[in-house]
Image 1 (cartoon, rainbow, N blue to C red):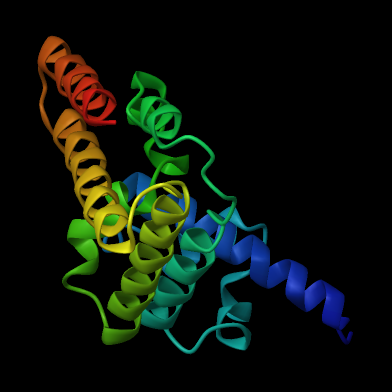
Image 2: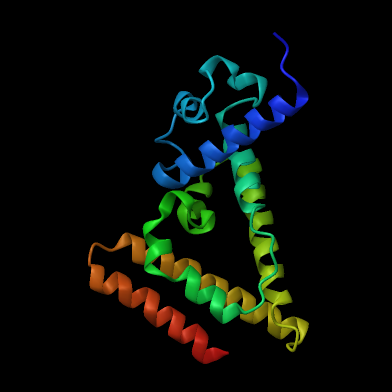
Length: 181
């Protein structure tokens, strides 16, 4: 039975959604293609009709998930407060792909690295656009510093096994960002 173009697009989106969630939750290496396909509600045998390889899936899932963050940021401090929250820290599978997969992407294919690079460029542009009163250079410096602090704090807060220290990292980073604005 032939599958419609709409169904192919829907299946591909389901695979990318499942992959991006599972990869953030468990990492690239811990997840198999079969697990992704099962989570998407599809059979393992159909995978190669959508992707060339697991490396291709990884790169395309990064493009997919990083491209979902496209809304303008109206208030950078409010955005930082939401990002640096305990609920975001706890929600690894649906949280920030940069914080969840950044360190792992270093060891992935050039295509995956390119997808992550483009995602970072887009995020920085969104941050810069939220700073209309700053010069281009100043906005870029603020954007890079703020984003680096946010991602770093999220990674570190997830890394430590001390709940107090983890909360403190998020809170202090938010306060540092707020005080700079």
